[in-house]
Length: 458
Image 1 (spheres, helix red, strand yellow):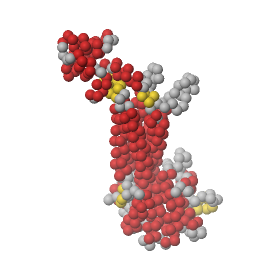
Image 2 (cartoon, helix red, strand yellow; image 1 turned 90 degrees about the horizontal axis):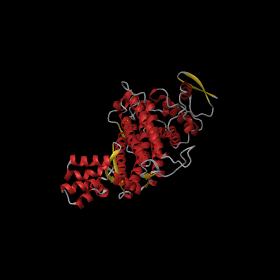
Image 3 (cartoon, one colour; image 1 turned 180 degrees about the vertical axis):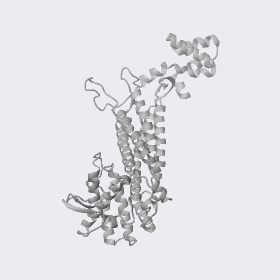
Image 4 (spheres, one colour; image 1 turned 90 degrees about the vertical axis):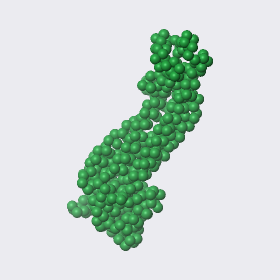
């Protein structure tokens, strides 16, 4: 052990640890969940601190040697070389002060090592011109933007896979269903094309949310005032961040608003929630369409990935849609937590940022991974049961809808009711009615009641 000191006094810290007294106090104060900061948040903080250290050195606010050592230590952190040095629980002091000081202390001690033991101060040097008020929301937004980018890629890939299946199944005519009741025929390709379009719309919403995350309050320092910060240094740091990441980070137009409001986090969380809702819907559809194999719809077959029962031999379950739905349930719950955290800001600062950072980063990370697996092991391997689809397409009572322009709604409804009561085919009854009333040429009645013709019409 070694003794570390902060403004409250001395604290014993493990000799091998890079962190200091404030981190140790947080470890002891908040043994809450055992969950730690997401690696991407550590990465984002490392990138931010490296840019600020270099900018402070170039503007003369830090000695060049110390600035370079801090920046080097920060780049090591960004490269995940020290992830084990961030032990602070995700549920911690408000605003993320504990985690921010964890970062500052690790960088200070590591920079001191790089300088051969020459001391570097966590507050006065690593944190020069900065505050938790501006760095935590900035790093949080950066981290979420990185994760949203990965999620958007996974969504695009899934949409492409559904679109490919839509093209493959474009000739597979089947019965439609609304209210889980028979509806007019359509093609399996049209159904799957609809899934692709819905996911593309979700990706556009993610892109909109991602743009809002590019707006950083860096340089706002305490409460957005910019106290002890340098506007020139901040501009230089933002330019360095743009070069280091390829993202077009920009200064918030109102630094006070950037401290008070975490609207960009709410927008991003809502976009992920809406994606989750669409994915739950699609997953449920696939489970219904694949239900059976003997007693359900069985219009499609999902890839068999593992045995489905410990007691029923040969049973295979739709495991990937089930997994994806459970992940999406978590995302919806995380959005509720984020919404509560975002609205809980008071006066000059939202202190609930650690909660929204954890929730949103978890959502983006798990949904991206789940979508990648779902696309690779499920969507791309879906097969159509063409015979089953054709059977249902020919049986649906809603085929009669094609007759309504000529026969009228009331007469067509009576025809359908008679078919349901008697069990006779709609076509047979329609031909009888048409022979009596001479509404259409018989060939036209037959054509209209072909499932493939109805599907093409729609």
